Image (cartoon, rainbow, N blue to C red; front, side, top):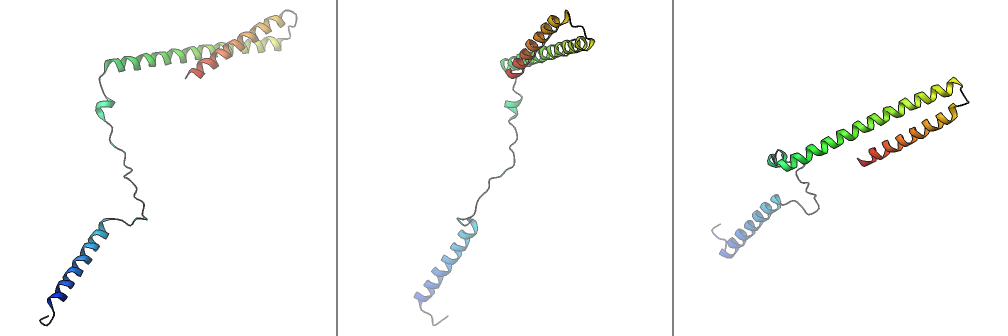
Length: 126
């Protein structure tokens, strides 16, 4: 390139520099119409928060646990009472005693209804 002019050489130099820079920039940035999805990998849990030794938090958790256990026990007991009363009512109806049993049957049905409403309310609480 002995016969080339310095203007032509500098023009080629500038042009090649622009091509290289554009290629490098294009390779690093995705086109505008592409969607970038963030890394879906879950983050490790914060162990200080998960296993903190805050005594007031632990007492609250223990109290809630005990309340839930008591509520579940009450629901279980009342459900068993409903089952027992329903079985007794069924036996009395099937036995065929009609004279005095109508009032007794109505009282048992009322007890069953009250217990059922109580169980429903306790279940709705949680």
